[in-house]
Amino acid sequence: MADHATDESGAAGSRADLIEAARVLFAAECRFVHAAQRLDQLPSASEPEVAFAGRSNVGKSSLLNALTGRRALARVSGEPGRTRQLNFFDLGGRLMLVDMPGYGYARAGKAVKQDWQGLMFDYLRGRTTLRRVMLLLDARVEVKEADRAVMELLDRAAVTFQLVLTKVDGVKSAALARKLAEARALARAHPAAHPEVMATSSETGEGVPELRAAIAGLAG
Ligand code: GTP
Ligand code: MG
Image: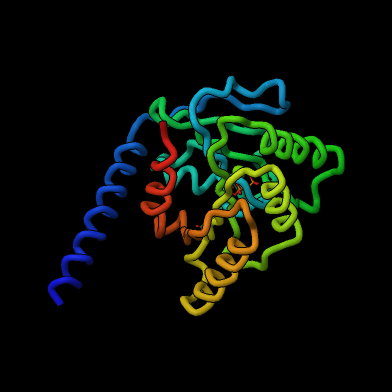
């Protein structure tokens, strides 16, 4: 019993420390640095980078706003395909957060699609400072072919990615448990995947401190 209590408080203490360090990091100034539409427009690779990728409308921009506690840092839209460039945000001079254009938007014109998805793939493959890709999956919808293709690309490029469920406010707990199990199985199946799957909601803030903690561990 005593051991159990010690273990619990010890683990809770270190987790609380991590979350606090993350809170401090994310309270630092976050400023928009640059938008890149082409590979030759990327800012110089200096700080460690964490990129937010996922299908159009999955909630990348919203999650960036929730993480940084800024309502309108990144542009959010109900209309898929809103973010069309790689947007770089500097967090306290220690970390670059990158809001990526979404993939898999069926209604986008072919040329536009090639343009922004080409840029996305080139960036993911070539960026030396990229520490991790947060790959967002909507907790309310099926994993799509495009998601699987991106996971395979990240495997091939040996870029570590972490699966992050979004919009968990929209699912009941049993459905969320199934979704988490599915995502963990995907993570096990992909060599480049981080084993821990996060569950978040930008609406309610659920899982946001934990995601901050995961990201803070990657800061310079
Ligand atoms: P693109 O830039 O077009 O690829 O989209 P995105 O992935 O950046 O999505 P964005 O953040 O613009 O959000 C898309 C829509 O989902 C918006 O209508 C958001 O309000 C909504 N949304 C985002 N996060 C959440 C969430 O946690 N819960 C709910 N219920 N809706 C959300
Ligand atoms: Mg966006």
